Image (tube, rainbow, N blue to C red; front, side, top):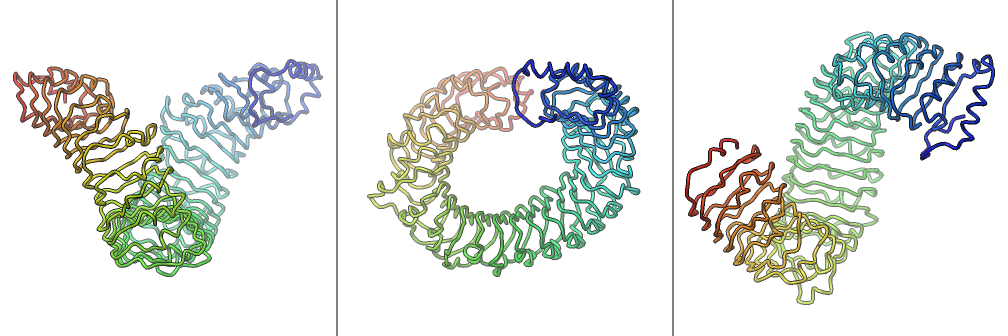
Length: 636
C-alpha cells in the first residue's frame, strides 16, 4: 500500500490499525518476504513503523515521505540491513548521530538516501563518509548539517562509483570543497546552493560527461573544462565567482538554463553563447561584464528570458532580430548601451511581454512602429537620452500594464486621451521630461481605477489631476515639482486609502494637508511647500518623514514616540516650537537622520540616547536650546 503525498488531517480510522494488527498476525516467514513499504499516515507513530518493519527481513524499500511523522528516528530502523531505498523526507523528524552511524554501518546495500527536511544538526558530517559504495542518490536538503558538530562534508562521497545525484542545498553551516580528481563518472545532479562550499569548481569537473544539473555556491573562476559537460541542461551559480566566461560554454549544446546572477564576472560576453540552440533562460545580471551584446543571441528561437541588467555593457542594441523568436522578457537596464532604441524590439518580437532598457545612454528618435499582434505588457525606457516626440504607436500596445518613460529628452505635449487608450495600464512614469501632460478642463471623464504606480514629477500639472479620483489601489504617487497650488482637495484623501505607501508632493505650492488620513506610510515627502499649520499625528507614523522648508508651527507631537520604524525625520527650516520630545534619543533603532535645524525649539536636548547605532545625522542647531550636551550621545 502506498498513499504517500496526500494531505490527510487528524487521526486515522480505527479500521486501518485493525489491518495493521492483522498484518502483525501474519507469520514471520510471510512478513520476511515483504520488500516494499510506502505509506503516508498509515503509520501515525514510530512505534507502528518499528513494530512492523523489524519483522520485515527482506524489506528493500521504505518510503515514508510526507507521512506526518515526528520525533526521533529510532535506532531500530538500522536493523533493516537489506534496504536499498530509504525515504524519510518532509516529516518533522530528528536524527541523532548514533542512529545515523548504525544506519550507515548496517545498510551496506543502500542506494537511495532521501532525508530532506530531517533535522540532522547533531550528525557529524564524517559519519556520512562510510555510506555504501552502492549509493546512487543522496538528498539532504535543509537538514541543518554542520550546525552542531561543524566539520566538512566528506568529499570522498563525490568519488563513489555509482553516485548520480547529490542534493545538499539550504544547509548554510555545511562546509566543503570538491575533489580535484577521481570524480564519479556517473554524476548527473549536484546542488550545493545555500551551503558554505568553497574553492570553486576544479578543472576535473569537465570529465563528468553525464552531468545534467549543476547548482553550486562558491568562489573562483569558471574552468574552461566546463565546455566538456556536453549533457548539461542547467547551470546555476551563486556566491562570488569571478573571471570571465570561457568561450567553451558554447559547447553546451543541450543546455536550457544558465543563471550566473550577482557574481563578480568580468570581461566580454562570449559570442559562442549564440550557439546554444536549446537555451531558454539566460540571466547574467549583477556582474561586471563589458563589451557589446552578442548579436547572435537574438537569433536563438527558443530563448524566453534574457537578463543582462546591472553590468557595464556598451555599444548598440541589435536592430535585426529573428521574427520567430520566443523571447518573452528582455532586461538590459543599468548598462552603458548607446545609439538608438530599435523600434524592432517593440514590434517584431511576437512573444515579448517585458522590456526594460532603463538607465542606459540610448539616444536618437524612437520611430513609430507597426503594433501588429504585440504582447508587450511592460516597457521601461526611462533614464536615457532619446529625443523627439513620443511615438504614438506606443499607445497602441493595448496589453500594456506598465509604461515608464521618465527622465529622458522627449518633447511635446502628451494628451491624457492617448493614455486613456491603455485600458490595462497600472504603472505610468512620465517624470522629469521635456514635455507637458495635457489635462483638459473636462479630464474628469477619464478614469484610471487600476493605477498602482504614478510618477508625474515636473510635468507642469498646476493642479491635482481629477482623473485620479477613482484610483483606489495606488501604492506609489509622485506629483513633485509640478507647480500645484493651494490646499489638497477633499477627494484626494480617499486615494489608495488601504494601499498607498509612497507619496511625494515636494517642491510645490501647497498650503495645507489637514485631513491626512494615512498611517504606516513608508515614504512621505512634502518638503519645500507653503504649509502653515501644525503637524498631524498621522504623518509621524511614516518611515521617511520629509517636511523641511515649510512654515509649520506648533509643537512636535509626543505621539512620534510610538513610531518604532522611523528611518529619516526631517523637520528642518520650519517654525516649530516647544520642547523636543524626550523620546528623540531612543526613537527607533533604524533612525539614521534626525534633522530639526532652524526652528524655534526650546528647552534641553533629551538626556538619554540609546539604541541609536544607526544614527548618522543629528542636527539641532538654529534653535533656542540650552543646557549641556548629554553624555549618552557617545552611545550613538
